[in-house]
Length: 302
Image 1 (cartoon, rainbow, N blue to C red):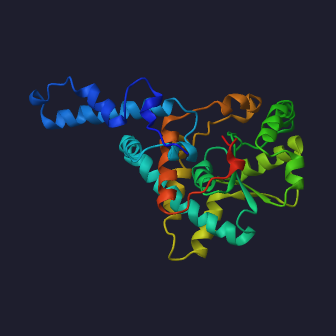
Image 2 (cartoon, helix red, strand yellow):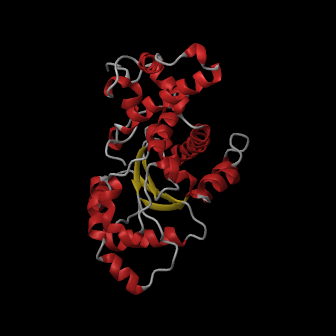
Image 3 (tube, rainbow, N blue to C red):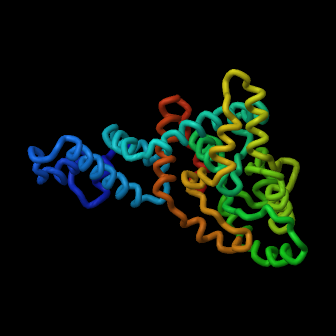
């Protein structure tokens, strides 16, 4: 693969550092305090990075390997500290969860399906570690479903069934697959997970011996118990990223109210600048740990 400097994809000339230098050469350096000059330099660099990232729909492994080391450094500099920390936290939790799932089902013998935004942070770790990964946008399912509400939803699920098929989650695909399909979501009381399982079963025929629905936070707690000494802080992770909506900031998966489930096509077009930076940080960490792996079955993943 030919590695090109990403700055050539936006309307400025030369490499990133050259472009930034050209942009600020007019500044009267001798008249500016050094801290002001550095501030302007870094601000311009962040602008260039943001322009590049705004030009792609989702940051992927292919994008990572198309960058020069200079470009990677520029993107890292443009990332907020909280984004870098979120990537580090999720790589830790995600890699430990993957280890347990590999032992339980066999490496490559399962599909990680993220429900909503909560499980998507770890989903990116799974995806970029080579696990077949799917993302299902849906939210606001904590209320008990009434017969009337369920009947209304049934009329809207045709579009969602079509979406599932594009993601490789049609009933036929699942039934014929030798893999286990593991659906994960954050649960407080379990109502939302149970509701979604019921709706997928009833309106999309998503069921079978190889289909399983799990609470992500409860599973992580079991992982911590099983990997004593290797992973700590599960409760802090759950509180920081799952109890609060912060992970949605990084996941790149939009909130899709269950009553608008037929609008899933709009969710496919959703973009988030910070999610692209998060993807970069996750990929960069996995690469440096020797864990980065591309899976062609993830090419259509949100």
